[in-house]
Amino acid sequence: MLSNCSGQVEKKSTSETIELSTKFLETPKLIKTQNSTEADNVNSILEDKLGNLWFGTTGEGVYLFDGKSVKQYSTSNGLKSNMTFCIFESTDGKVWLGTYDGLYIFSKGEFEEIYITSPISSTRKKFSVFSILEDNNGKLWVATVEGVYVYDGNTFELFTVSEVGKGYMSEKHNTENMLQDKNSNIWFGSRTNDGVFRYDGTSIVNFKLEELDDHKWAWPTLEDEQGNIWFNNWGGTYRYDGKSFKSFTKSNGLCSKTIMRIIEDSKGNIWFGGGEGICRYDGKSFKHFTIKDGLPHNGVWSIMEDSKENIWIGTKNTGLCMYDGEKFVSLTE
Image (cartoon, rainbow, N blue to C red; front, side, top):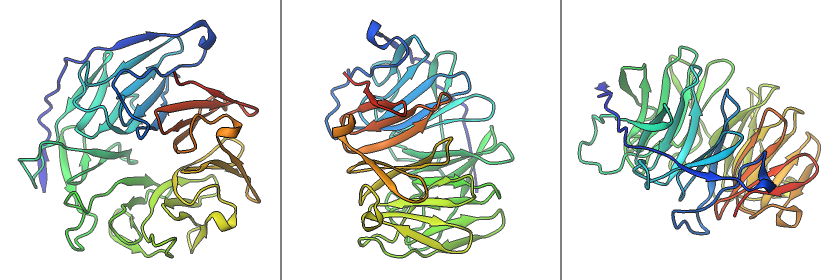
């Protein structure tokens, strides 16, 4: 079923510039201006092709660091919500933002809203966008509160992942995370459905998972250099080697029961962020880091390695720090 993208954008967005102190000439410092709480976090981090760093938050909007100064985009200057869920750069260099209330594209120094006309509900006041990916054909897949849409640059086509119960067509049954692997399969995960789903371009398969601390759902998060797919939930993590799923929990050395983010660094280490800090897995053992080592908060929601091999970590209380391989540098006011 097709729904037209109106192409309408809001161009009222400007930016607030926060000058850096001389102490942080080469690193950003996030200054809170939107009355966020300790429960809010930095939940997405992106380095774009130009080397700019983006930090999405759940209470302060999004920050852009260009190497000299930090610009904050929020409800004070154009966004309709300060709660961001994802930041994504497409192959054409465009930066996309998924928020609690809408999909945005960054253009000419502003965020412009891209409207998704839903065939399901015309009365919804908030249209949340949780995850964005680009497939090998250049189409964008957008996971929203009312299902997954495929965008070809002109129209949004609704893609149904599952018809079980209410499927992925309502607030209680929506796709939250998506991942495309090297074989062009697209994986879908949600907290409201058992297991994970894989779409190979023709059909969808639902993989059931071992229950971890009463959780049988998972978010697809990472494909490592070996081709393993990693998934996470509130009970631990899973690694899929193409044949079977292997689980990792605190009993195996994982730093936290609840895992929010997984990345692989340039050295092949796997990093896990959760409710009790962050840990690095070298394939044999886990190294655990907490506030005692320099984290601004033990609740870790985002991890990203930049082109200089620094590890950026976003935490609760809108915390941000950078790990240079030896020490953690806090970058929050």
